[in-house]
Image (cartoon, rainbow, N blue to C red):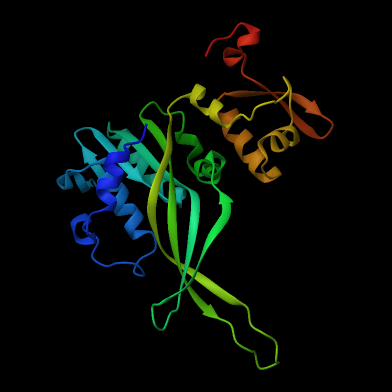
Length: 262
């Protein structure tokens, strides 16, 4: 569940009330990170709490919340330390559902143009990050929460013009900040059954990564990433080969047609 009222309340707050020192164009994702800290924990004394040699984004009692927009590999040492110390940990990962691109002139700071991005994010977008902490996903003390937002993504344009050889140089853009303007769905990944979320509709009883990619509408790399995680979580089982491809099926415990139960 998401709290729309809480989201709207935070969206209307001045930046200084969220403890954001600077506005758009300072540190990448700074606003989104601070916004989410306040969304999940309004008590500021619970923010940035020192735990051993690490600093937790949020710590309330025996529960730690880490907000990670990307770079889950940087979480591994933290997660192991927190959980071995007896803390329950939730990793929050925001997923842009719709992105409105806002391009800024680096010299004047003026908005050059805005553009609605065609990509619509979905739960599969979390997989390349989740694979980086795969070996913690089945720990009892770890929960992952995925939450969707619509965001304005501010990017600074650079480059362009004509090169010495007379060829037109391509303009590049650097992401400065992401500002959420709407909130979407949220899901909790706590056990093997929760990872059924990633199984697309219409899969045959026995399927390959190619079948998975086709039904999910994702690339073969994304399908292999999903199946790597699902196999580790025992949500699916590897049962053999179909030609050169691995052959999978849903774990019988979750297959209601085989007498299992969700």
